[in-house]
Amino acid sequence: MEIRHLKLIKEVAEKGSLTKAMDTLFLSQSALSHQLKELETQLGAPLFHRIKKKLILSGAGKIMLKSAEKVLAEIDEAERAVKRYVSGDTGTIRIVTQCYTCYHWLPSLMIDFNKEFPKIEIEIYPDNNEHTEKQLLSGKVDIAIVSEKRDYPNLKYHDLFEDEMVAVLPANHPWGKKKYVRAKDFETENLIIHSLPLESVEVYSAVLAPAGVQPKKVMQIQVTEAVVEMIRAGMGIKVMAQWMASPYLQDGTLVSVPITSKKLYRNWYAATLNKEENPQYLMNFIDHLKCNIAGICNV
Image 1 (cartoon, one colour):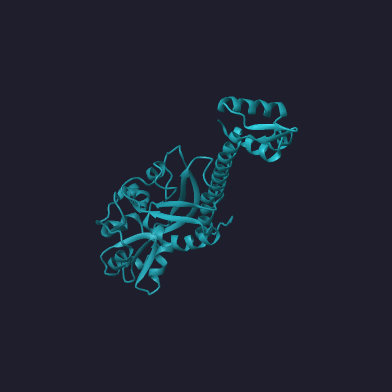
Image 2 (cartoon, helix red, strand yellow):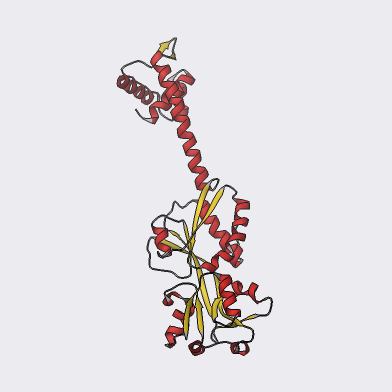
């Protein structure tokens, strides 16, 4: 038995004839008659009695109609639920970020997004030792916010924004008088980083390594507040995004200095699975990312 058979029983029971059911089922009378005979043969019982040119439900027909109404109602509700899911009425966005600094602007973004999509839940997953993109490929998350494009053909990278990376140091540090710092300047400094390996750190891969420079010492500290206190105490310097450093420069105890005469910039991307059936609300969230962070608004 197929869904078309259930629709046939329901429509004929309501309309009283195959002719009147034609317009709803979009089939000819002969095709509907064939389907009905096929179903009655399969069940071994007539579903309708033909009385004065009208089809009236038999006892078996009444049993089938009750089930048909229940099944078709459940199918309709499932279709509506899927459409709500795709259009953004309900759903969940699971996010992982490659860098802890992303959490600085995620809260305000989430508040803004939920004003427009109140039924979409947002879950933030920690970036563990596994590559950020691999969490996406394994289906653990829906969006990965990353600062570099990797060669994954099953992923699509959406441009988000560009930020300038600066060295953050105590106000009385010798670098504070410089217009910018060079790669060689790092040879005498303790460099604070968020995570290892060192090769994954932007300033090292883009500036220090090409110049053959190693920092005096590398310290891994993952908590921003602890990093700031270490810098204030003169125990090291940290390279971070200018917008992220700005709140900590307000009291004058810390200053920021550009990296090299050309400055150091970092690009950010939102990575998703490269497929056509991504929910619309997922793409809407990426638009909100661009609007809230880069000021490029399509929402």
